[in-house]
Image 1 (tube, rainbow, N blue to C red):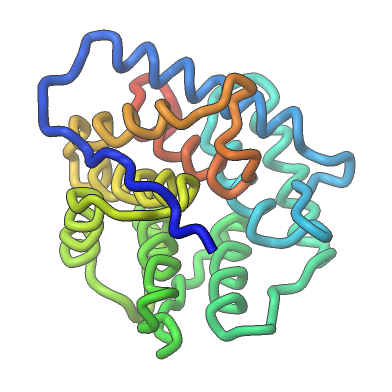
Image 2 (image 1 turned 90 degrees about the vertical axis):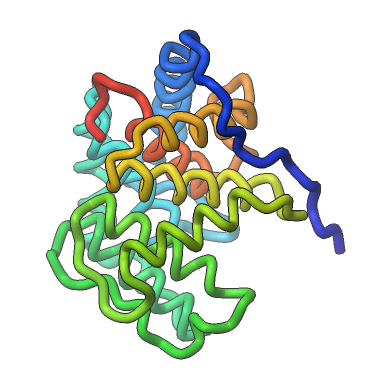
Length: 231
C-alpha cells in the first residue's frame, strides 16, 4: 500500500500580497463545489451510501459561508442529519465518537465533543481526535477528553513543521486543522500560510481529491484565513 508522498512543510517566509485574493478564490471554488455536489435529499454522497461525516462537515462549512445559496444548502444538510437517515457508525468506537460529535456540531446541539475514548490514543487514530478538537475549538464547542487548546496547538504546529509521508488529502486535513487552531489563537498569518499550502492542492473544479471531507475542511480553513468571510 502506498505511504503517500512527502509534501513541503509550511514556510515562515513573508506573505505575498496575492495570497488573500488567492485564498478567497480558492474558497469560492470550494464552496461552489460543495453546493453543486449536494444531493436532492440534502446529503453528500459517500461510498457506498451517505454518511454523517461528509454531510455534517459540508453542512458546517456552508453554514459559515456568506456566499449566495450556502445558507439554504446548510439548512437542507441539517434537515437530512436531523431526520436520522444515517445513524452514527458503530463498527469502531472512534468511528462512532467521530460521527456523534460531527452530528452534534452540525446541528449545533451544544453538547461537548467527546474524545475521551481510549481508542483515540492509538497513533493511527489520534489524528481524528486532533481534527475533532480543532473543529470544536473553531466553533466554540467544549470538549471532553483529549488535550487542552494550547497542547493541541503545539501538536498541530509540530506535525505541520515536520516532513511526513501522508496521503495528500490527509495532509490537507492536517493543514486545515492547523489553520483553524491558529486562527482561534489570533495568529492569522499562520492560518494564511496554511491556506496557501491548501490552495496549492485544489483541483480546477474546486474540490480536494474528490473528497467531500477534505473539501469541507479546506473550506473552513480558507474561511478562517480570508478576511470578509464568515469565519
